[in-house]
Length: 182
Image (cartoon, rainbow, N blue to C red; front, side, top):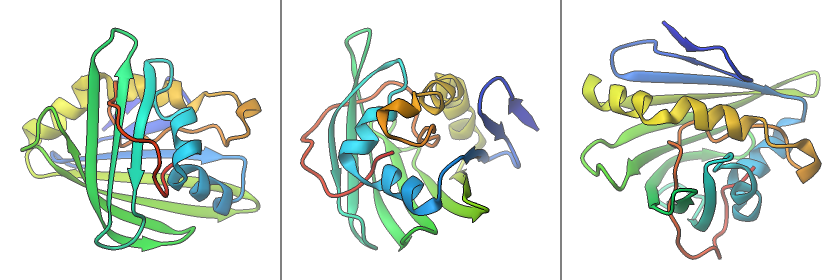
């Protein structure tokens, strides 16, 4: 079931517990991967037009953790965190994802970076444990935030894309991390 085609990313629901986001970028995968995993770059695009990432921490290795905080334009804060299960540079990242507002609704995210002729397709498969958690994620406004972040200007020195697995509205924390960006 496709849920959105209004922007540059395609969002589908392959099962009752999964969200699949696909987005192509006119950039080689090592640059897209760098934008996805470098904190200073990630902060530039992740929040789309809905706020600002104020803190990001990343320990990009299996067993390492990540966390970011965003302050939404309406003034509230949202935070997300997880633990890396697998990291294959420029190819694949598998990590848990927890929206701190609903800590019991964790998901497993698999992000793959595939390059063909200098263009990179990013696929993000988000696996929730319950349909209710998947539906809450979908209904959070995630797709709108994703499309906004995907359309950030390339003039920022970034490939045009969004961290689709992250719901719009963010949280803040220290910004001296080691990876996660765009």
